[in-house]
Image (cartoon, rainbow, N blue to C red; front, top):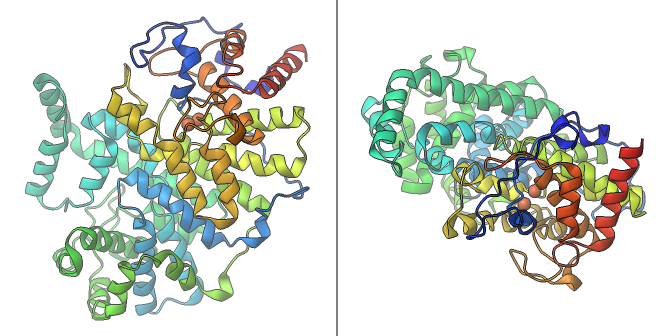
Length: 508
Ligand SMILES: [Fe+2]
Ligand SMILES: [Fe+2]
């Protein structure tokens, strides 16, 4: 059963069935599992190798039409979701920071590194979401969004933030317990959260092939000029220039979004020589006289303007290997959001490829589809961990939030024009043949065979993976449950292919 990954919990021989199904819209029994394909957004896994086949039988979405900047800028919208920021935050930060980099005289190579530091600055943001949610006892996205408005050197602001965001929905005793915990261990907890985020973000940049200038820029994003930042308390010029620019740029965007130009300028000046490099504050003061900078921030086509900023001599066309790496990296960003989804996207991609191969789909199309499987839950970055990790029944409102995630996936992937077909395929993974799925209640005639394959893989992984409200289900039982879903939620041919794959591995 090696293909099921290194985790023995997936094999019936090692797993004691603990099928205590979650209450789903009032249904609380094991049969709920079969309906609960709806609830399949959480898991755990093993790494898989990336095939380096040529793009045989490639679909219209050929990789050679794409630039690295187009894909990274589009996917940065997924990072905005996790940070609770208005769409386009990373893009706008790039607009601001790139102009600042030009103003201080960075050369072309340095500007290129800065460009990707700014677009990927939040790449590690999903990795501390579950911990943040656990500590504060509320929506991680709200906590992250509101924390961006806080000057952490201002004790009054900090105390107000903690009081307003800690355990506000819970019982008084729980709230007091959390507040006490934060009061006693606030510094180390904050350091831990930032460290997790920055190390993860830097790691993702390295995996995508960026150099240390980008990785270190992301790694030091929360360091402050006066040495009071986190996680290492770097000071002054010891902080990489890309990190200093990225920090200032994100603060400008956050305050500009809520209070316009004056609010942004005031905040930059207020943090002169505390958070920010004084020379950058001065340079930004000069830059801010240029109305074009501010007009750009309000331009609905800012993404196109940011794409045009990339130094032309440095633009990089995507080959298929890099496109695979990007899909894998962003799949890992999704999987990092919750301990219950660790490895989910990679496993779904693995199962998808196996089923597709069994069904005779050619290597080029499988490679394309595997990217869709890796990115199918991208929109889950927009769902709070207070919902994803909840150990109990979801409310109607929480279900509404969960059901938005395929829409987010489709919207983000559709930003990349050659990805439009893949966006539709991935965005439909919670639809059903009988029209009872979501978000569009599509019917069988609207569901491509590729979507049906991802759906079978997704449900198989959801049922066999650990969940906050139950343990993993053994493979034979999972297949039995899924067998009852054939014709309603699942395509019979795709299901049969899955069973054959399982049997083949079992016989090996
Ligand atoms: Fe999924
Ligand atoms: Fe999903």
